Length: 485
Image 1 (cartoon, rainbow, N blue to C red):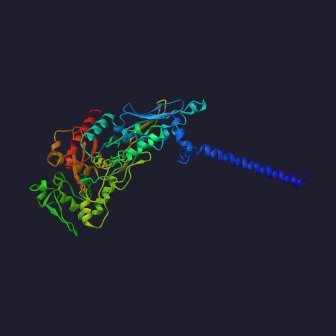
Image 2: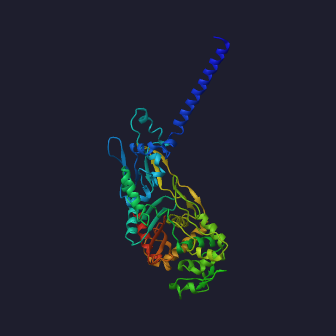
Image 3: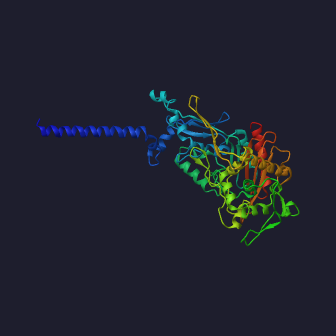
């Protein structure tokens, strides 16, 4: 060949070699690093079809299968759920359109594509055998979960929810919500039936698909006084410090006064000054409105609420977060005063209020709530143990002890005295008015059992009446936990 032709051929070969290397690199990148992202891309039409060809692993708790895969023909599986309405807030659903709950949080572990299962599933991949998914073990106590759901459903409430935590670890032992739904109804592989089920559920005004324990917010009423009392302790008060009370309190610049409940007339809340522990036990509105409106003031209460988790979407499973609870940050004493008695702009989820109670038991430390206990390979080997993690410390150990004394006083001689003799060691009642409605948001947060307190519980029921009416439900949950479900 002539030199010019030799150079042209050489350049062509070099260009071809570069293109081949680039192609191989791209294939390696796509298959090795982007495969999972491409499978998950909502624009991938094969994504929804292929996901039902995988035998997803089970979701279990206390040795019981709560969700598992059932083969329906030669190629496809569908999900099945045990006691679906009771455990729906835990498992969520796995449908032709989407997934929620633990089905969402541990989607890739359940379908076998998680990197933590690479070694366990290597042999299956090499010999061409279908790769099964791993097992997700939830933290819930199945007996207590059923007790909670049955109690909420029979409470005659429009909406209701309950959360129970292990105060030392943050493990979620109960997460119940009503009205609920059956995940089996939406997990069908028939797209038309699934669509009809979703439309029916979404058309219901009380939104049964929405987990009311974590993703709906309610005015917490007087249970929020636990946060305000904690702010007072941080500011230098003690449980025995005399605090302002009285029948009525008008915040600076307010056009309307905040009054105590009519049932408090003639009681200690009428006095001009009483110890903080007595104001907490009797739930004096005027005391805590003054604290939020003037001393220690909005900034102190807002900061303390943030230390408990208010303002953050709390992640309790991988990528699954609750709706952020809130207390208003404002320079208007009237708004801060109203918010400090759990009304106005103050809103909270049952999960958040259970975290407040849990910190009192745990030397002032809030542990990060978690719903997964451990992950196992298809052959039973533990792949990952979920370790407890500290979230914040809103109270010192001494302040937590004083808060516990105040919660005990609520049950011993205050608004929760009807719970004396139950498993509830201490707590706080709360009744939040709902504007224009004939019902209230009835709250109780508490700790127990009485002889060995280690659980924190929050219960909200929406019905006429007072917060103490949610107390017996909390006691039933603590009983179930104390008896091993």
